[in-house]
Length: 296
Ligand SMILES: [Fe+2]
Image (cartoon, rainbow, N blue to C red; front, side):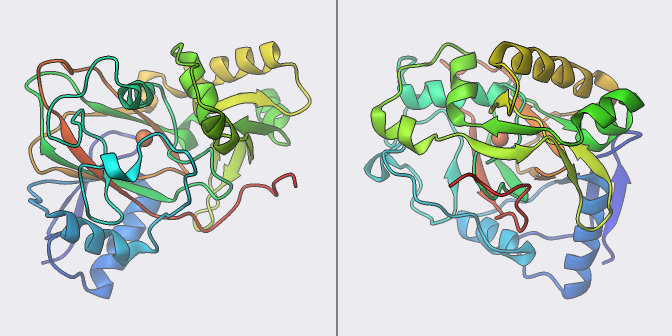
């Protein structure tokens, strides 16, 4: 069956039909999906009842999984609920399958995913695609929203485009967590969250389109004071997340949503996280370009 993509908004995001994500893809299917990602930046695959292993296998059609050492990181391996390598747990469940305590610091880290961000922008080589699979969904809320950073860039005036072209931002998980008042980080975490330099404007390697590389992880602009940086980044984010640039994904069971972190931002939305389970699982593809050299 040919891969068919139906646009979901006038500017980006598409719904794919003709693909069974549980099975190996042909090279023609992979090429069609990659071309779809370059064009739409977000693709939705419906009715994909995936195991963790199938999700990993599907993801690997498009490159290498992101992997990294996380010294002193938030959730220790012994507390992991999901054993499959490459699968990240974005549920509100602890290792025993119970809803996490409201005081659980792992949950505090997850809450900040409700701020607009691009996955792994705080790593030297930021992520390419992320794929999120909906396994158990709450009865209300929990949309995932996406904003098209190419359209946002195109919508800037010429003066602002010229101003931001050379700018470099500093990204760290500590900035996004600080934004929701979660500042009690361990020394290991502070060391692991050393700010990373990223260009504010990036260019897509295939299409050549420019986009804003924004995220709540961005806490400063090099050469600017922190207050001036934060005010400007907040202003750009407000511009970039106007409704005309946004697709809000209303989850159905067994949706698989795939997005390009180089061209979009996203955020989770609220749900009744104290009483309802949301079990969504992510695989992440390693990026293949750095936006700028890092400081030694
Ligand atoms: Fe995310």
